[in-house]
Length: 458
Image (tube, rainbow, N blue to C red; front, side, top):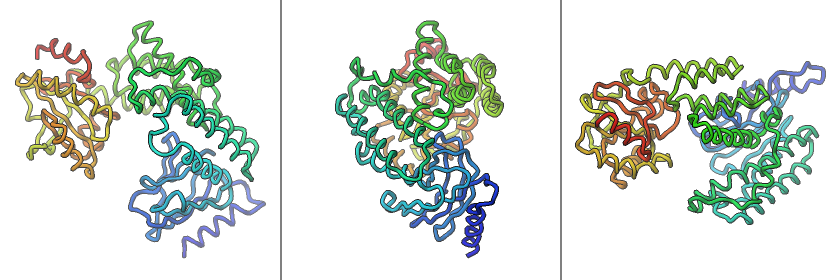
């Protein structure tokens, strides 16, 4: 009852005509069949997260201080896009067992959220579920994406209570969504239709080529698709640098992104790249220096500096972080110290990771070639505990070789944290004394791995 009275008071304050504009929004609602997972508000770029307390009866109430934009309201796998800005008083109700048909959004400022709800449901209806859309041939795929664009445009234009300023911005976003989906078709069709080396026809990307402004800050902050288009443009620039000047991939990426002329976009792009890229570079000092010289966002720079200092502890020649008593598929437990006297090639992977599984045939070949030599091949799964049986079954079904281990706390395992692993697969080579040879060792599918082994006379 106390929560209800608090909500009434807050709504009264926000609704007061003579009140100074508030610097927060209010969100409340009820979740039927709520789970024990956190209810969260998350920005579409995943940088903003706020946990909202859910009562035992499924009700919730909280205030939010966010930049006006689209956010996800998520509980586990159940989620809905909502638009939040200061002064909103939103009520969101849903049933986790029947999410799509049960969502109800009401309250002050709910018009845009309801537009998004109608829009997203219509998009699902048009393109269907799963990856089937990417298996379609060019003409049909493009026709479906154009239908999505035209249909969502009509929904936007017919929506009531939405400002013309928002409509103009969202109209551009709809076009960006269309262009982005054309831009990714080549790669996705090649993968899902199993057409290795597939290339789109000459005029397929003519609409993509019409986007020539990559420094629109307003669109960048609002549209995830525009962000993807901008990122793709600079990725193409990075490829040219690699081919023309033989620059390393990580550094080439930073160099390309640094060409952005809008400071907000440039800082965000550099940070997006560096927060993962710095964990993969084999030239840490040059990578870090270039980032620091070109970013002007002090918050981002502080975070990348923190990663840099952490990565210096796992540089070549440093003692390797250790893992202890990890569950071994053979029924025992295994620690890194058990391999003292031998080189150790570590594969950090998970059963759900496609790129990890694609390395398995090559890993098995390398393991077979070096079987009985002074090296152990150790695969560490970072699957969650709920997927433990999936891990055991995959090891058995795929006849995985080497030493198969299950990390003690998945991504939160100390070994994973110490190596600052943010993406998998990740390969690490440790020498016979327990010191790091390469914290970003070549993949089994790379010829450079055998070259490295030969250089070390393994």
